[in-house]
Length: 345
Ligand SMILES: NC(=O)c1ccc[n+]([C@@H]2O[C@H](COP(=O)([O-])OP(=O)(O)OC[C@H]3O[C@@H](n4cnc5c(N)ncnc54)[C@H](O)[C@@H]3O)[C@@H](O)[C@H]2O)c1
Image 1 (cartoon, rainbow, N blue to C red):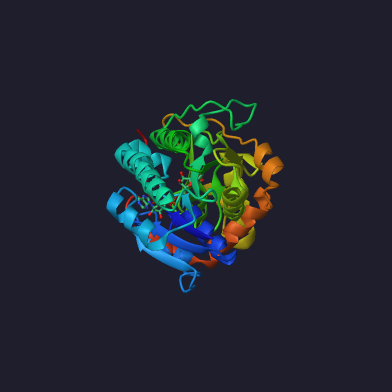
Image 2 (cartoon, helix red, strand yellow):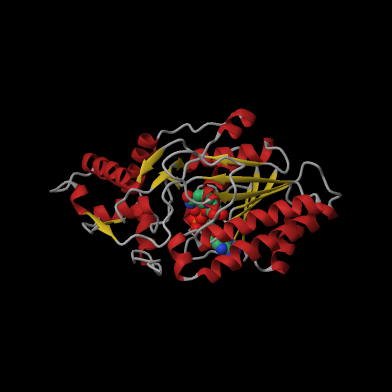
């Protein structure tokens, strides 16, 4: 299958690109290379005859139409997005532009391509979204695919809007779509502005390890390579028009997660004090959602997927990867906004 992947130079998109090529699929990676992109993420497949790269903005309709006409993909996996909640608080405009308008442009280009090809049944537009569209949970319960949408940040509101567009293009035009909403990802190649890499790198640099509020917010962590497998499965086996929640079944409070990472670093690269001494509580994020948790029953029962990596194992692998890959993360620390406290409101 030839898959057009948007956002393939980002964290999750690059994991999808690497995995898709390993499975023998041809991949066209469409990415405009924002501050969050890194082509090194796909260096391992860049020389493959199965891989092509197109630098383009998903809001640029003529460029996207040209890419569809040139490559004639059998499927689209749409991951390109502005993805950092704190940046969405400081500058929501870019989130509306890329996540809403960009998704609209992708849908229209995919629809024109699908219609021009004679509406093949096997064509798919797979939209990759987040559990943040469902809002915030109390101490009990989990998000199912039927949980009403209740986004609370500019990021999650823009993703919710994009999900609605995708469903509308299915209902109105018959475009064969599949949606997935997943929990927080982590693992190798995670951009160093997100919680887990921030903890690892601040610890190593002897800097304060910032924890928002009291660190009591709960997230359901998913190892990125498990997510890439689930996405490729949903693309190929998911029912048209259906959405699937994907979660790691690994809930943890932020403070416990941070302490676990510190303990792993104490083991792997002992310093002259426990890294947990560097933990510093900072002002909470405005509108910080208390808890996310995914009920992944549908993808487990219909598609037979379940996560293969526990949180402890995944964190161990992630810490080891950052320790071994300083050449990857060091240049990224110089990018605009990285290492600064963003999104105080
Ligand atoms: N990271 C998570 O924990 C998580 C969880 C659930 C869902 N998601 C969703 O998964 C997708 C990928 O997330 P990620 O963490 O890999 O994001 P990321 O920020 O690491 O990567 C996004 C990629 O999209 C590209 N991009 C951004 N705007 C673009 C535009 N206008 N045109 C073309 N390319 C553009 C960037 O250059 C970058 O390579 C997003 O849609 C996000 O909403 C992420």
